[in-house]
Image (tube, rainbow, N blue to C red; front, side):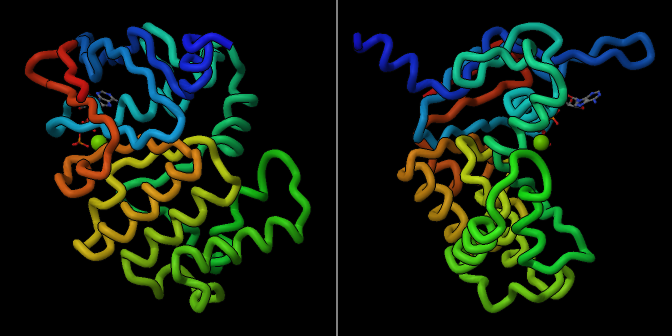
Length: 236
Ligand SMILES: Nc1ncnc2c1ncn2[C@@H]1O[C@H](COP(=O)(O)OP(=O)(O)OP(=O)(O)O)[C@@H](O)[C@H]1O
Ligand SMILES: [Mg+2]
């Protein structure tokens, strides 16, 4: 296999001239000017920039939660615009894990049930396997002792670790995280970032939006979106 082919296979997500525009009351709004990126397996790819520069918009396009106005997003070479909503939903559930700024947990489910939620949808997994996997993940994030509790009895940092365990439950290829440390103190931020980096060492890819300097420092690559200079992106 040539080196070029190997490198191309390493790319898990690629965005080609992807942009997003909205029309509100006859006015065109550019939420994201065209962006080109290629993210390799095992990278901790950071998207940063000022408020309103299009970070969340880009993350939503890369993760298939939203569709671009023009351009295309490819997951392992397959264009997300070439697959229907049902297949895309399956892909999001099986291959992608999500962490948002504020933890979204179902209040009437226990911590264990929240972590196990992705197994209620998509491809069927043997119950013993997924139960063990969820227990193992709760141990990994240091919350085994809270598995029977309900979300409203947890601290913000604990909740974010539950979300992290849930994001990993189906052993996703990619973890998408939008300001995952935004509501955490320094200690919990470090803890979460260490866990995220550990995942990249296991071959997963993390795509994270952040403007927290400490979190950004964990990145292997950074894309800076510039609201005042649309279309100009700086990668480092
Ligand atoms: N559904 C929408 N309709 C209209 N405008 C939108 C929509 N979504 C986002 N925008 C606009 O697009 C721009 C980029 O929004 P986005 O949420 O991606 O910013 P961001 O970089 O994530 O900002 P923050 O750091 O504040 O989260 C903003 O000016 C926003 O108002
Ligand atoms: Mg945002």
